[in-house]
Image (cartoon, rainbow, N blue to C red; front, top):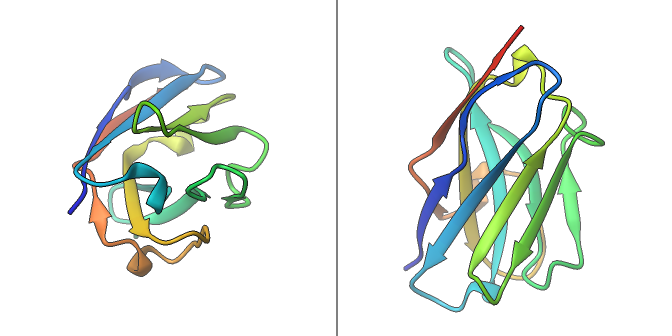
Length: 124
């Protein structure tokens, strides 16, 4: 069992930056692939980025590639999502997720553990 807690959301102007954190507890953090997703009102939960347990491999969706960076600190049991050049369409609830394994993957159904989400609002 892995418990995940996101933090770092808030209100930011378009063009600004935020860094989200996801603190994990319960198991050996490096054994888990970490992912970030978001869900806007009326839309499905969308994959954003994933990182392998070692941090050597990352995946990004086309919508955030070049603007968002996923990283992790296994010593601190924490994953991060650095978000730059934010746009109003990035407004959503952001979730971190974990799956036991070594390969970073995109489908949300493959992630068994989820945080409660943190709201990000980008004003124009």
